[in-house]
Image (cartoon, rainbow, N blue to C red):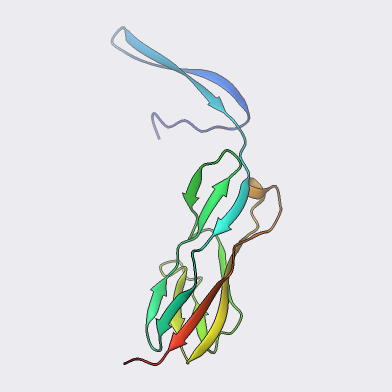
Length: 132
């Protein structure tokens, strides 16, 4: 894409654009960041038969945060009670299947973000209740 800059490695570069004899420039510095932690919120209550969307927020070594919901692998300790989707359009959607609890978690093992380390979220306890 014209005008898009991609950082390929650490370092600095000067970016220049010109048109009709007029030009402008800026400097760009690329630094590596690694994923430090994943947060998926606090405990969740879902009524049986309903769903709730979880959001995974990654915190990086430079202090920045980013929504990484679609990058993580979601799991449930008890899919009988609460299942959680890894589907492309429903990633992070928890479904209350039966009354009870489950521990939901998000993990990411992506060498480009974490140097190959698996980063686990703070787990969330999901409680399914009977609908009113």
